[in-house]
Image 1 (cartoon, rainbow, N blue to C red):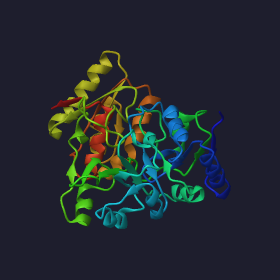
Image 2: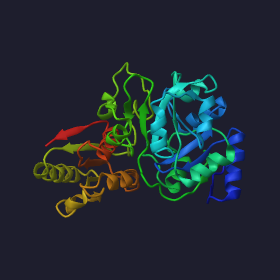
Image 3: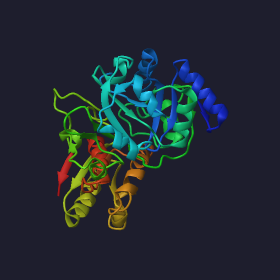
Image 4: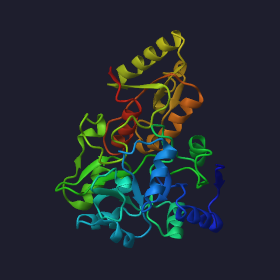
Length: 345
């Protein structure tokens, strides 16, 4: 299968719409990452997402819509969702609702809930409007790889696997959407993202909980209620280890561990803050942004992780940031990329 990469215009939206209505796959940009979309109400189309990604079938998908009227056939809406939709849709907030029978169980991994969001990226919005379908779309990468934030990333993973990539440039946020469970008494963040706990609480006027699995692996019998929970995710091919602790200890430890690996003949490097580039200059430092700017780190993270593979890095040591605000989303992704391997300085 030849993969076309097209810039967004009326003809490419029409082509994407035709493909989706035929049960084919289309990769498209959102404000968070690129998604790999299929008609959410077509079971066979949805199954082809799992095949193209090599994704386990017990990992649920997110359904993307362009208009709230589409919710009527997909799910039941609790009153708590209305102010959140007013505040954050379109945008990087996914909400978990009780699904209706029209949604195939293949979309939800057999769960009674369905995850839905309304993306704000103009290309995503135009494509969704053109096809008029609810579109199930995980990130458009091979399963387990860092999520794609450019069309080139998608092509790297999906060339000859899908018919079309809509190239809308680099994604703004760089990390996947926040996933909020509204199906229980207490709203709970299952996956942190650009809409933070404080932002949600300011709209709802009540406490929002954090799922315990955000900064640890799921237990053996825990169910993955959201994408990005169960498996090692976002990972480069090299082994990533996080280095946690006070700055005066972490920077020397990063340097020592990396140089030990280099002396042992391993291709190794560090992921570090802009402020520490000079101190770690002999460790092949990869600048992930300023320690004072979690949004910048989020924007750079997946592109940096992909570059590690291009450079053939075998061993990677990374600085960490406090898991607060957008920092929680960054540490969720870094933790899963490292399979939660951490050394405390």
